Image 1 (cartoon, helix red, strand yellow):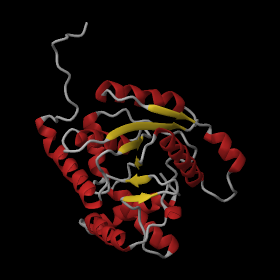
Image 2 (cartoon, rainbow, N blue to C red):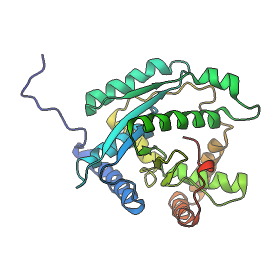
Image 3 (tube, helix red, strand yellow):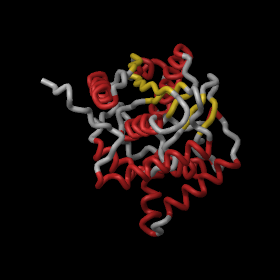
Length: 269
């Protein structure tokens, strides 16, 4: 029987040995929000929950930031149940975690992407890119039905760096994922984790013991995907130049300042 006098431990208060990491994440998150105007009074923000470390970290930081800022915004965790393999069963793990730890209700959008992909995927098109467009459509449709004005995605600093390299190597142009842009449905897409490196998120996810799940897509973890190639390239560069990641992120931010946001070219979710 639960002791009614026992207080629930706040998920936002770190143990002393983890305080430094929490502080670094909070600072990086706050800087991205302030520098790019990601969060505003009255925002209704959908958090795209994939069940991976990035989306859990994004949700946690949005909720944590919500407790401290002098303005109000609402956060709505949403998962697109793609219909791949065991993902349907795994979605319940996300739902249970968010309810137990954050007292937040997960909304699940039911889809059947395998069937759609089988019937409509253009030959030569990567499953990942097509699936990303399907997810965008599902999330945007839900946002419009619920009067939600922003979608928060869990792309981090390494994603921004890799996207810049991919664009240069594949397309010969300077481009990367934008911290904020308005999609074709007039919904703002925001990336509050753009100052946070993947290694920090990996460490944070272990501390928080997030129940990580996979999407079970047939292309998941494909080492031939060009993003995986770019990731290996960044790692090789970092082994030769330890500050490579920081320097590449600084370059990416210069690119962001000058580029014209092209909604049709935005990277996959």
